[in-house]
Image (tube, rainbow, N blue to C red; front, side, top):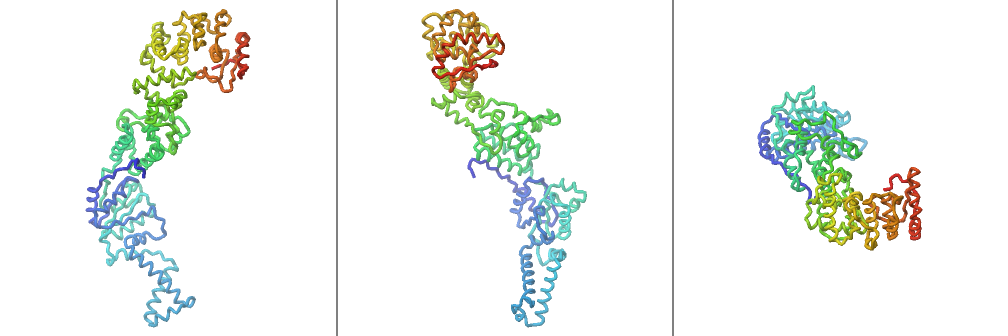
Length: 614
């Protein structure tokens, strides 16, 4: 067994077992009460250790035996005598056959005396007649059971699972009671409530004493310690809903064993510990075991709706916790801002017999401490579905200042390489939130707030070596400010001086300039200086500039506006109405020479109706 497995502790019932053992000194009839799976069998084993009497257990419910009930009881109480009788019967049948003329092996010569032949022959004849006619009389075994020659003084008869026996089997058990009453302690085991439901119930009339299981085995007492053990194993505190729900539904020892088996299977055998939210996984296991129909709904991704009669009142909520429907509905809807990802974000990892592919928090912590290419790749590719983004969004506030600074520095570096991702945006947004909280940046932004935002980022980005155009590129790309807001702040930009040619992202500088003079997309009103500025663009700057003007599209979406597709295919966006189509076509004619230069480098351009070019 895996040493990581959770081992259930043994409940000490020795005191109660000794008390019951003393009761069994009297030849009375007892009923050990407890529902199925509550630990009755284990308790009887403990009782057996505390008495010098042998507990002979018969479970008629499980037996598939053609013998009569009394014969079965006799075989259990006197196994040696019963075996000798069976051997004797077989020998007699064999002798009867061998003494006939059909199979004559000369056996008759061994019995010369007439008296001996008469006695043996009579026995053989009686056995043969008994076997031939298959006589099913209980008289023979009844006599043996009540015979004083066969002692019952050191034995206790236990009839297990009495409540699950058929009516016929129960009636047969009453016959046994009538034979053995006062001669041997008899213990009926089962659920007394189910027995009382039987209209022809005679058991209540013959029971001398009713025995209850020790309170330590009661459902209200067996789960609290177990959940404390789980909490220590998982280094977390489980909600009160757990033990309230389990104890309220009277989940017994057998249920606890089954539940623990699946906990060990999913968390340790399948290695989910650290890959899933522990409490949510426990609820999925619970649902699988005890609410299979609800589990099927989870598998089908069906919304679990809480009916009015399934909603728990405040009083019941305080006593028994929420209903299972309310709990599962909450699990389906709530995206806990924690790592590992919640059920809502990564539901398949929580289903039983499935593997969880996301990494543990410890693995992510180790990754964060490195300056590896892997961390850079995770940063570039981190979106809302990746475990890195889930880790980042849930743990960022607990990072050290050095860790935050490193992530921001890597984000700036990757951004300048034309990469972008939700993970990079998240880091930028959180950095800004630390300086200027969201509630201070309610839209529309005031000029004062825009100025504070710009000054904050300029102080950081200049230290990283970004020129003015790259600062604009970074702020717009990561949604710090829009072109509109940037244009309001940078109202004195110049594009017709020698400094413009030295900028590394002239496309964003020109886009911001157009916004500042309110000529974004106003192609007809652009003067010669704007078109001249475009002459200084490199290939990427040219493509990105016209993407933001709605003339070109790489078809990859906003996050990839700065990415050149592998097939180098771009779309020439044509308006749905005639006016816009005419307007776009006139622009395309103006930039046709640059398009032809790009075509010579392997780029292709295909016309497409402009419905949603991002």
